[in-house]
Length: 103
Image (cartoon, rainbow, N blue to C red; front, side, top):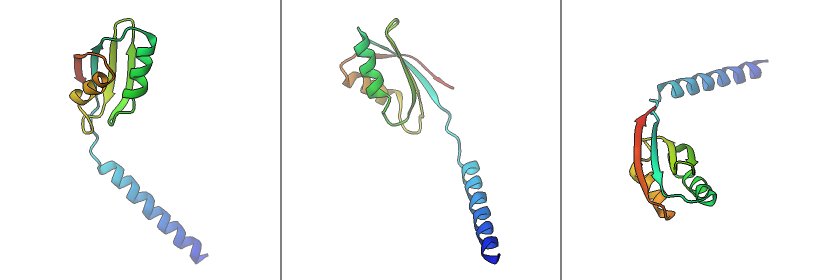
């Protein structure tokens, strides 16, 4: 019985520590950037999505062939528009920032 009580106390202390740690961490506001990228076909879109989605700090990515745009939601503490644009350019596409805003 005393053993179970000890385990309960340790578990409760651990839970409190986790809650305090997550509450104390400052939340980084995400940003969204939209690039005009010279994509010509569905394979271009697929290539951008498959490669840029895994860049550090990318939270979400949408590529549209209709208006040749790549919209990326990212964590500015981990990356920036320059690095994201370079990731698109490394794939062989021109990339120009159309919009960059905080979410």
